[in-house]
Image (cartoon, rainbow over all chains, first blue to last red):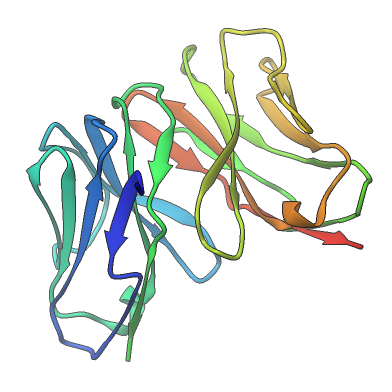
Length: 113
Length: 112
């Protein structure tokens, strides 16, 4: 069983569209994250949720909206996609928001054309 | 704010040799962990090794070991007996409550 799974793995879409990326973890972790990895491979945190509550919301356009229906799921919805949104998006989870290591999903490569 | 710096964008090592990847960080916190993650071409982020800041002993995991210098805020990764499968992007990461901050990464290639 995959510990942190994201769907889809690849997403190609046109500018202006709205899309969602789903994430589920079966580790029983309390904290989940979304990271963006740009073309230079730099990983930057976007959001962090602890038990369905938003903890971290970095400087991210409000076109990006995370939704956590329960603590095992953290979905990312993106409105009005732009070319600059093209990147790999990673979901991750950790036992808590303290010192525990993060487990990552396999990433979703989003390409906006 | 905490920062993590990896000053080597690319490194290369001969198979079976040893290579050291550098990482420095800046923080005013006293409690934190440090990690090295590996990202092979498959994109999957894999934890290689962790170091608790309160421990003086350097962490070791098989062929991977760290040199943790707390006062110097340095956290390097040594890979011994390098294998072709070690070729990947390596990220140093700083962890404290509410934060997991990554360095820019070092791309390691392994020559047969």
